[in-house]
Image (tube, rainbow, N blue to C red; front, side):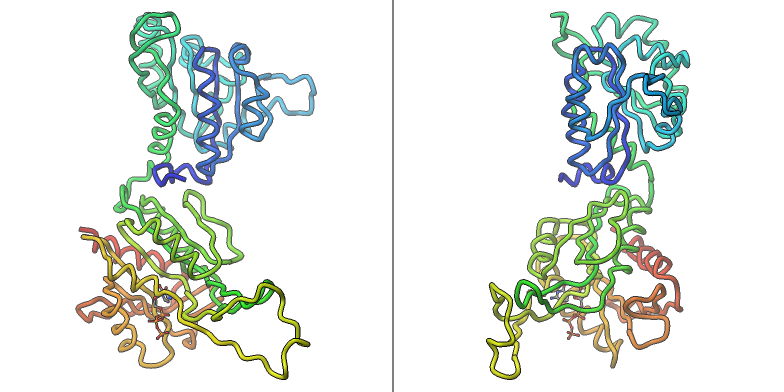
Length: 407
Ligand code: CTP
């Protein structure tokens, strides 16, 4: 997925389609939203179904298309407009015909589409599409001004060839442009990391011994997931590269699931232009030298089994060696002895901007706990000692330090 549409990932989007020739573009728009990781519901006006079939849009959105405000199979679902209006993170009306715009401007609820708009508490993006003269008519202009006063977002139509054969303003922008506008609205949180891409790694990595066994560690991924959420809440685009965990991918974060260190290295490599990289993953330092194609049977081993392990790639050291101008690299160090000294050594070797030191044997720290106790060490030797805090609080404190480092 393009990192350009990151804020769409995990979001709930209603696509409203009204009856104009550009309705065919809504099919592609739905595909873009689905590919970007959104959940999509579609509502069509009756006229829209003359241009594109509900079957097409239902298949692409993987959900039932709504158009009847009073469906024939009465099952109490006439309140669907209210439920959907509350369910959505954004309602995109594309194309919005002059008739639908008039309905929206006048609070009409004679169609499922306009009824949902009245019930919605989420942002609404209206994408007008019509013939040039209809678009510039005072009636449409006034209606669009009214929509703006309701704080609806309006995407200007493109100038170009229109279905009437005339050339002018009124073309529905391409689906990619509509998706970009949606992404921008959803990005809405303006924070100190707006416009920045933050790459976070989390969880353990697994190194296979054979098809059923592996070498791994006790990391649960919680700290990394909290960091991803904290960065998102500060307005960043967040990419989370996660080893196997029991956690659900955070909303609004592009989550890439991997297993082995080499898969993590590859995923990180694809996004190594991120402004900030936080390597919170407990990456395996060693992997079995060879992976057996089939399960190792006890009977095939004479007595004990020895595993020869070889070093994995050091992902963070590789990033440090190829660091971009202005890029911020944060590492984690897990130390049981000589913590500050060992962590400082890693910070220097891997060319980091900060290293977060934790000692799993300290009370309230380490794997599988809801709290953590860390020291944040910077290259000038400064050590910020944090108390025992919820991992969410620890994540926020680390992100505060990141914000201070942004050039
Ligand atoms: N790390 C990494 N790739 C590896 C191993 C570690 O990117 N193959 C990252 C970790 O995510 C962490 C940092 O490097 O942010 C420090 O990890 P650690 O394993 O403690 O560092 P090492 O230098 O491998 O230290 P040790 O001698 O303690 O094994």
